[in-house]
Length: 109
Length: 114
Image (cartoon, rainbow over all chains, first blue to last red; front, side):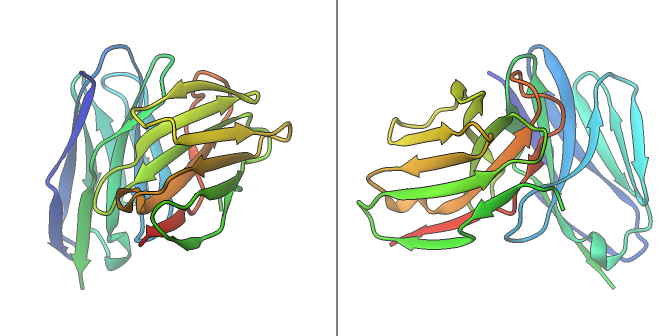
């Protein structure tokens, strides 16, 4: 069965304290892995797409990496405005997205 | 701003009623997908429409139905509402019938069933 899990479920960081979020998946025929940011009561906001193992992408304080079975979202020197739920989703060939449950990130000033 | 708009933003309905949610997709996108997101969970795929035809469906009962119009806008209809249907309903648009590349989401419709 295709499955996406994320860890930790929730993470509290002090401003400037770097950390990583994990997304693990067991799917057949991966087309792409996507990271989204979601603020409370709003729709997910696209961050990154990764297509192959070894690929990395960066945007401001965020860096996403991909291996054959998992992806990491590294947050360097986070700020309070980085507080949100971070969602990982996988897209299989010919299929729609399967989302993980998300990681709720809180960055304290 | 993604260009994907949903209406209404909030809605309260009574158990047993019917509801219609609307979505206007991003310009140039011909594929619309609908997702249900319960509180504290990730979005769950309901179905997808490509060129006015349903071409993929998740594990949702037939009382969840949809339409896509020639301008690629879409509707989600839910009949016989149940309390568990309370959730944020998200619409996502992409280009291409196979799900395309990244999906751009609207702000969602918060449905409360009482």
